[in-house]
Amino acid sequence: MDKNRLEAFSDGVIAIIITIMVLEFKTPHVGDIRALIPLVPMFIGYALSFTFVGIYWNNHHHMFQAVSSVNGKVLWANLGLLFWLSLIPFVTEWMGRTGFDKWPVICYGVILILDAISYAVLVKALIHHHGPDSLLAEAFGSDTKGKVTIMLYIAAISLCFYDSRLGFILYVIIAGLWFVPDKRIESKIFDADKRKS
Image (cartoon, rainbow, N blue to C red):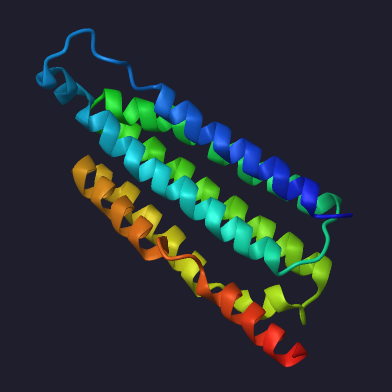
């Protein structure tokens, strides 16, 4: 199957996820700048979630540059990723409205873990479809970075039981680790293009 419809659908869903998050901001009814102060926690949560969704969009885009087609398993794995990503606006708003209370920040971390796991499932489905010698399989290798990320999410959730702010700070650090698009795929595509020319 052609991959273009999957990419277009995924782009649309991710755009909607970002739109839903920004719509949660309620405009103050007064013109005083101090009316924005209660929105600061919401903005902080939104900025982090926007970053995470952007990271997934970037890496999803790069990953699909390394493949030529999809099958039914890939379609379902992609839908699984989009499902868990679509829950980010819910936990983001809950976290912001409660001022980063323990359980909203823990639930935020749980959704981030499920996002990471579903992304790994999508990668596995694509590698299975294209074979162990494919460009994507070479690029991901044993996916140490993905596995370490899941362990860091677990550590962040554990920290939340002590102080939810510490867990949130670790989420920010994890986003920083992934902020630059995944170079593993880019370098493999570049190397493959050089070999062709």
